[in-house]
Amino acid sequence: MSPKNDGSRFQLRSAADGPKGPLRRILHAYGRPYRRLTALAVIASVLFPALAVLPPYLLQVAIDAVLLEQRPFSVAGQSPDWISEDRTAQLVVITVLLVTVVGAAAVTSAVSTLAWGRVAQRIQHDIRTASYRALQERPLASIHGEQRGQLLSVLSNDVDELDRLLRRGGKESIELVVRLLGVTCVLFVLHWQLALVALAVIPPTVLLTGWFFSRIRPIHRAIRQQIGRLNARIENNLDGITTIKTYGTTDREARRIKEGSRRVFRAKWQAAVWNAGVFPAIGFVNAVGFSVMLLLGGFWIVNGPPFPGAAPLTVGTLVAFLVYNHQLRDPLIDVGAVVNTYVELMAAMERISRLDVEPPEVSPSPRDMNRCLASGPVELDRVSFGYRADQPVIDGIDAQFPGTSMIGIVGPSGSGKTTLARLLVRYYDPDRGEIRIAGENISEVSRQTFRESVAMVAQQAHILPETVRANVAYGCDADEAEIRAALEAAGAANFVAELPDGLDTPVGQGGVALSGGQRQRIALARAIAHDARILILDEATSDVDPDVEVRLRRTFRRLGRERLVIVISHRLSTVRPADKIFVLSDGTFVESGDHDELIATQGDYARMWAQQIGKAETTSPIIGNQRRE
Image (tube, rainbow, N blue to C red; front, side):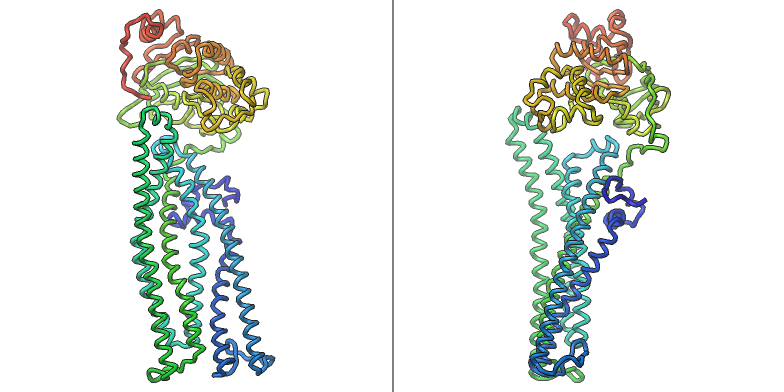
């Protein structure tokens, strides 16, 4: 199936069925929708240098046939009857031809530039959106294992390299080849012996370019890596600027950024040194060829052919050769520039293609497309999971949560609460065992389908840099009445009403205009507006005031009459009204029951409750477990 031009259905892995190599694979996949436009660009890129080759030839005709009258007047071996033998008329004909050719070359150059620019921008857009889509489809484990700055560098800097490829690598490489072939053909037609001298500069230029290619490629790869690391460090520091200022480490972080920037500088400087040496060397080789041609051509004209069998040389032919030598200079220098561009692009394409190395999350099967999960109990059947194979975080959990209830999950720090929440929302799948909803194994359903039935609020609430309205309606397109009802249920209606523009108040990057508790309540309102069958709250009220928490407990209890509400909290008062409370320790449930039952057993929950209200020893058998979250 061919990709759509809007990029909405592009997948990087669709390129894997095409040619080998990241560059060819990507262009094969994404260039197909623009075949006609690319064909126009290629045709224009062929015509422009082909036309640009003609003016020196017309100059040779004007000098030899019109000005010096050393041969009969003819163009490309033709002298039509309608051309007058008057030298002035012949000069006018040559001038008209010259202006026509130059004008046509200008038009084809403009068409080539516009067509390549359009193709480049379209493919760049498609690959950027497809790269982001591929990144979203990767499992969270692979995303968490990489620095965000590196990923941002791929999506911005590396994708931008495509523009250089198609504008310079595509357009200029075609023009370069056509110009070289055209000039070579014309030189041999004009004077094949002198052509051998003129073209003698090409072999050393090719060797020099090949040597340059082998040296510059690892340098550009290192530049990309260093830029990605620097971006990651800068982004991390901006995210943690409060911590940096609090602990007085601004100077240390500035030194680390300086060192990262210095590494980028060194890598770029190394590339600049190579460029500074190679390109002048290519120009020097060409200049030597020009000088030798001028000396030999002048000797040829003044003293006659230098060896037996050599053809005479005219002034017009020598002038044409010298002009063609100048035309060859830029293409030969551009060989190095095109190689340089290609090397940089290959490094970028390798990084883009690596976005799709990780297998994607389970794609929707045909049965998932128009189907939602049925409401029902959630069952955990011998569920085990670990971020590393030799270190389980969740270890053989068995439990059943009724489809309409409020469930509390508590435990000390490191017991696995957050990991369990990630399993319930399918950020990860269990290593062993099953999680079932209404008897159906959730790992056999696409994540997209599953997440339409689940909403989660984490302790660190993600807030969009938009308005309150946009944050609450995100993902569900709730109307104003539903937004206000969700805010009311989340205990956020009062403070939102006091904001300068109410629902339409911008909250800033990451919700900087809001307090921690306000951000949590906005995120909770978003989850409530989503109206999911399962609502998972992972320390979602840790930053709210006690009086707000009391109100939220009533909200959770009410919501539990209509759906499954799972409240994970270290604050036991939050889960006290739950229908059933599970105590998690060392990755497994050690107790379960309602609040009164657990207090009566005098177990871990009772000791934790006593500690929180100040009526027990400060130590507990379940305190100090290895951190698991």
